[in-house]
Length: 462
Image (cartoon, rainbow, N blue to C red; front, top):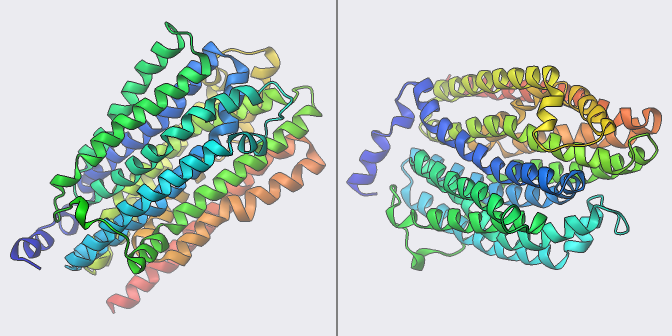
């Protein structure tokens, strides 16, 4: 390790700066990046809802599991690479940190190309699996949208992974810039393709892909100026031990998103099945669920942004054995995420119709079910914000098994079984009741596991 690298470790503000300003410095750009990432989907949903209508909203809901899949894969490489990079940098192991970054970038590039190709080739089967009847009204819109957005998945995955690594390198503002630029462009292109050019839902998809390419160009332009060490194309490659190390650290976030994808598929099929048995029909519940998901992305973006902003703080201070700063950063992140969840809950309970109206118009039955969905299914949303904080905490501190259990809890252990069982007795109302029950149970499990982790810090200090 060179003298410059030694000094960069010793003088790093991650280990000495006051926690609240430090968290704000890293979390605010991360939150903005997450909100901008959500804006890709939300903007499309708004334009599609007003131009195409309810069937367009249902179509984007049906294709949304592919977005969840690629986000999870991006986190598998991004969170895992950034966590190991931060821990090794904090401990002064610069060569190890370098190998993790090289391997992570190579891995996500290969995975992105393969994922985009598979989604494009299997787009019809994926659409049917995610709840659209091939003989129904939603299916052709969903296939048209997915046919185009599949082409942008490699760019989206590389940018998302890069944003996490760039943030860990101490450049949260540039990380934010990569996604903000693409999102602003996406809004403009959505308007151009859907209004003057009249391209409908396919135009929204083209706008998304072009914006993702611009964000990708910005992300890849950062690496020649990487702060911790030099990165060049000739140094890229895959080291199997470092790949396994990154994937182990990123596995909890990946599993959480895979379960979110499976939950979305189970939920869509349940809504279509039990909705058809109710006065609402199959299309209204699918459309409402899609709008509600995009709405909740705003809240979750705050929590994930805070968690990702804290990731380098947790990792660096664990490597430096400053356990008090690790705990302090967790509780401050916990308080901020919970407060945001409470505010979001108040908005959903007070203004459900106004929120739904942002995404287009519909029948009286559509708005009736939408208000019911937001008030019941999303009743305990403030508990949801604690899960990404806890998952990222465990990933950043090397507690991969604990992070994996937390990531499996809400969707895998609680929500999916309840979505299958409760509707058998309560019909479509059972689907709505499943979410708040799962939120409460996952919250209790997450906090209990963190408290156990903190007791181990005390033992290590002694």
